Each structure stands twice: as structure tokens, then as C-alpha cells.
Image 1 (cartoon, rainbow, N blue to C red):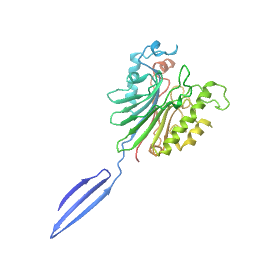
Image 2: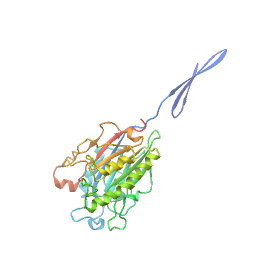
Image 3: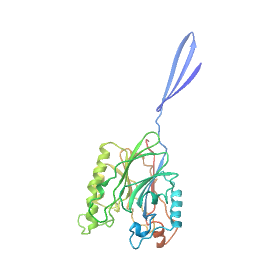
Image 4: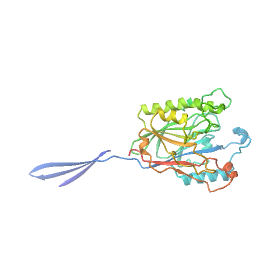
Length: 304
């Protein structure tokens, strides 16, 4: 009897040849589904992170560039976070991101906007990534002196062949819990204008039947009846990883950093995997030296 194993991407075929006057071929076919390994995905606002001087980066008067030792602390926290994919906000390009995310381990993508507070992705080597055109629809005031932040749109190919479309965003600040329709604050008017393009992006991904995630600093509390959340969730069925959880970061303010999953990705979320990495340093001064946001992360199991 001879046995030969035939490998296939989704099938294992074992063929046994029997010979005694006549030859018989018996093939046993075992089907199995390839899955990617679980991935840790995080979002982290790094609070005006720049490698340039305050004057070059046009930082506000109360914001100072990180000292080398503070950048080293952030890099140590990034190593401890040990995420496969990190969506980051308020980072002044790839050089600044490399202060925290080791280029020997991560591929770094940022938007092409010439602003200090850019968004981007740090993607562990081994995960294929294609950067799609920047999502400029969020800049609803393009002629303003300080434009609003574009979103970073990327398509990742994961182990096992699953694809994941990711949109990293940082929406307009200053309207975390005001009533959008009734507020007289100009920040709320701008945030309200960002809802339709964001909802359209979500609806387009759902129409494509893509697995997708939107994550970043939404600058909005969703744990209340909210027209912004209603509009986004009306665009497509979504799972919000932060729903029902309290944020332990610094003073324990409600979550404004959110992770939303849609399409097949909604089924990939590992239950109860939401984590917030807390800084060991205590005190208001450390907020300026590190960040006023803590990394928020989840675990997904693609293709399950």
C-alpha cells in the first residue's frame, strides 16, 4: 500500500492505492477552513505628537514637543501594548509616528494632509496593506485656515486571505455631548456636517459586503440618545466595542475613542476583549508629557 498526501489551500486529500490483481483508489477528503490568527487592534490619540519644534509645527502656546525621554516612555507603552494594528491620531507624519512605533516592526501610514494633527496606521510587518485615497470628505470646511482632519482609508490582507477595510478618523472637537440640533456652538455645526460623509462611507462598505472597521477619536459620547450615533448606525449594522463600558483613562471621562465593526468584521470581535491601557504615571503634568488619551484595543478573529 502506498499513501500520498495532496495539499490544497482549503482541502486535505489523502489517497490510498491498493494493488492485488486489481488497483483500487480510495481518496479521503477532509475539508477545513483556514483562519487568520487573532489580531489585536488598537486606537490611540497621541496628543500633538511631533518631531519638529513648537514654532515649526505651529503648536498652540500650551503645547510643547515631547522631550526625548517622554517619547521613549511612549515607545515603551507601545511595546507593552503589543498590538498588531494601531490607528493613531494627532501625529505629525511618519517621522513623528516612528518615535513611538518601531519601524523595524511596523509599517507606518499617514494621511497626506499638511497638518500637524494627522491620523494614520501602524501595521505589523507581515500584514499586507494598501493605502486607499485619503478620505477627504470629513474636511467640511476646506477653505478655513485650519482644515479639519482627513481620514485614512486602507485595505489590509490578513493571514488566510481575509481582507479588512479600515477607516481611521479624528472628528471635530468641542461637541462631545451637546445636543447637535440645538447647540449654537460652531464646533457642533461642523461635527454635524461630518456625519453625512461618514455615514456614506459606511453605507458604501456595507453595499460592497466588505469586512470593515471605523476607529479613532470621534470626539463624541455615544452612551446616550444621540443623533450622530443614530445616523451612523442607520447607515449599516455596526457593533461598537466600547458600548456599555466605562473608560478608566485618567479622570474616567466617558469614551470618545471608539471602535466600530461592520460587515463580517462584526462577527470577528472577540467578546469581552476590550482593554484600555492605563499609564502608570499619575498627575496632570503627565498628561502633557504622555497623552491625554489611553490606548483602547480589542481582539478580532478574522474569518471565524
